[in-house]
Structure formats: structure tokens, C-alpha cells
Amino acid sequence: MTTKNSLLTDDDCYLALKAKDARFDGRFFTGVTSTGIYCRPVCSVKTPLRKNCHFFSHAAQAESAGFRPCLRCRPELAPHSVAWSIQDSSFILAHQAARLLDAPDGWTDESPSVEKLAARLGVSSRHVRRIFEAQFGVSPLQYLQTRRLLTAKQLLADTDMPVTQVALASGFASVRRFNAAFVQHYRLNPSQMRRQQARPEHEGITVRLGYRPPYDVASMLKFIETHRINAIEFIATDAHQTSVGRTFSVESGGKTHAGWLLARFDEPRSQLVLQVSESLLGVLPLVIRRVRALFDLDADPAAINSVLQSSFPGGDGLRVPGALDGYELAVRAVLGQQVTVAAARTLAQRLVDRFGEPIETPWPLLTRLFPAPAVLAAASSDALGQLGIVRQRQAAINGIARGVAEKRLQLHGGADVNTTIAQLKALPGIGDWTAQYIAMRALCWPDAFPAGDVALHKMLGVQGLKSPAREAEKASLAWKPWRSYAVIRAWSGLLVAAPAIPASLEIP
Image (cartoon, rainbow, N blue to C red):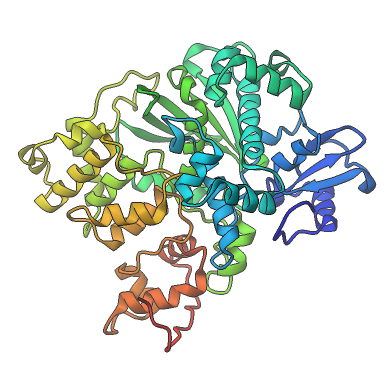
């Protein structure tokens, strides 16, 4: 298999391909020499002969080798491959570089380049190229171009956006460059990818997003329902399915895009079906990325369970609920400090009712947007106090909103985790618990751990010790680098075997 540090052999991949095993979706791609096409493991076509198969850990590697994406299984629908290490520094740096390239939020006002990527990582551009190619087998720009082309392929197949708009939304600087890259890589004109049929305008655009099973859909929907705020989100269940509706607003390129989205799970196909309003077409790749984060669609249950199985048997279907908007999540996390979930929900509801901007949608239950950063940054103490928000939390909310409005504070999956945690803890009223919780859900950080959490102390049996947070931190080291998932499983009451706490280990 063409990858470094892969635990899958070519024979493993071929067995998964023959079984069409969705657990391996996105973990590798198969290039078929007899057709010149590369596919996902779940492709419904007849399994090719073993001698005709070449296996790649990333779509960029397959395209670099001259293979074109399959039009039937559509590699752009596969969940992304997310790998983590806590020991190999080159591995960590290469995957952090890929994480930045995968995050549209991180490049809102500029186009990514190797030089800019290196500057963010604090190393030379030569070093970035070297470790990236050693890890992934392709250059950073080849990786980025594949991501852009697959994004464009999905927009062409699932929307009726003009080709010019598709090119710009996918990150290409011009239509000419887009057309040239598309023909060079796929040997097809962009217009030949069109599949979208006529649809009623109120139904918006529909796209499908893949994930790897198992996925505990019921637990995810229960979490969303428990934390739901009226007017900005709803959950509706009929005889056949449950849908999650949301309003959404995002600033991109100096313009604010606002609209709605509707999501439902298609469990037999291991997909999330997403409908997005026409008003969000210009930022559809960003919306897709945010939705993937919200539902944690890129998690790899096999990798996570290999570390957590002994302590949490049976929890491999649980995901970490993310955030559609990291700023909103941070504000709601502050409102939830030292109160029950119901009390936090009441405070958040009052905040939306008082400061949320009205919006028209086809859905009667979706009538407002979450208050914009500039609005809460300017909210007076009296106005917030009238909602029942105490002064300490008022200061934290003002600080978060001001930092986001002034673009000093980044709360999305492309943000630097350590820097962001430090920025959050420097704000009034935000301690380590809140900062770690925000990192877990808004920054999509798989190794966040709120060591001061009282519920965790009880489950780990350290609540009576002199420094329970310190002891919990020690115990949690056995769960690295998946401590965010351990926390979710522990909160769900699944902990059956707490890790032994090394007596000699010192936590700085």
C-alpha cells in the first residue's frame, strides 16, 4: 500500500474491497489498471482482479499516479482519513499541515500556499514539502489540488451552480485554471459531470456525505435534542426518519451568507443526506466541512476503539458532537458553566430571543440566527443581566465575541489548538474545563481532556483525592490520542475499567 505508517497491507485492502466493507471507506482507495479509475472500498461495481489493483491511502496519491475518480462510487463522498500520533514529530507536523489544507475556515481571506502553510507551522517551506511527501507520497499542492477538484466534482454533480461559481467556491483563482486542471486530471470537461435534476427551489441543494460505521445515530440525535435551542434548530421525526434542521450564518470574503440546512441519516448506505438553502451555495464547501465536523463524520471507529475498547467496551459507535459554528459553541459552553444542561439551554434561548436576527426559511420552526459576534461584543451588562447571565459569564461572552469579531480568535477545525486554548484561558471567566470543552467540540481536537470535570472524577474514582484533576489527567494518558472520545463514552456511563494511575508520573 502506497503510504507511510499504514497498518493495512495490500492483501488487507483487497479483502475489504471484496467485502465492500464500509468501515474502511476513506482509509484507502483502489486504482484499477485495466480501467484507469480509482474507487472507494464500497464501490458497487464488480470486484476487479487482484493483479489489476493498486492501493493508495489518499485520493491525491491515486490521482498523482494517473487514476481518475469513479463516477459511480464518487470518491469525494468518502469520509476523510484522520490519523493521530503523540510520538512521531514528523507525523504530527505532516498531519497538522494536511489538517490546515483541509480547513476552508482557515483560509477565508487568502489562498493557501506552501510558504503560508510553513509560516503557520513555524518551519521552512522546504521542510514542509519534505515531511509531507514522506508521509503522504504527494506534495502539499498536489494534495490541495485533489481536494479542490473533488470538491468541484461534488458541486458539479449535486448542484446546478454555474461553472464559474463552482470554480471559485472550490478554491480556484480562475475558470481557465479550473477547466485546465479538470481536463488534465479527469479527461472530462466540467459540464460532463452534471447530474442534478430539476428541483423545487424551497428544497435547496442536496448532497450526500459518507461516514464509517458503526455510528450510534440515536445517541447523536439525543445529544442534539437535549441541547436544542428553539428558533435556530429543530429535530423532527416521522414514520421513516429523523431530520435535524438548523439556521446558519457565516462570513466569507467580506460577505455574510445566511440560510438553513436540513440533515438526516441514511444508515443503510452509511451516509448523511444534507439539504442546503440556495443562499449558502457560495460557501457550500465550507458548509459541508462544518456539517462533517458537527456530526463527526470523519471519525475512524476502528482506530479509536483499538485504544479505548478495554475501558469502554461497546462504545465504538459514539461520536464527539462537534459544532456548526465554533463561536456559538463557545458562548453556549460559557452559559453551561456550573449549571445543568436545562438551565444552560434556558439561558441560551433567552440570548437568541433577545439578540438573534430574524431570518425567513421554509421551515416554521427556524426563524432566527444565533446572535452575531459583533452584536454580543457590544451587548451591555444590563442587557445580558436581564437574561439571568451573571457578570463573570457576561465578561467571558463579551471577550469571545470581541475576539471572533476582530478575527483574533479562531474557533474552527483549522485553528491551532494550543494557541487557541491559551487565548481562551486568558479571557475572564474561562478556565481549563471550558477551554478543553471548546477544543473538543469546536476545534475538533480528538485529544481534549477537561481534567477538572467532576463527573469524570467520580467515574475514575479520584474524587476524594487531594488533587483529583491531576490524578484524572494521569489516568487519561492511557487513552491518548483519543481522550475526547473517552470523555464522551465516560459521560455516557460506559466506563467499566479505569486505567491504572502511574504513581511515579508527574504532570507539569
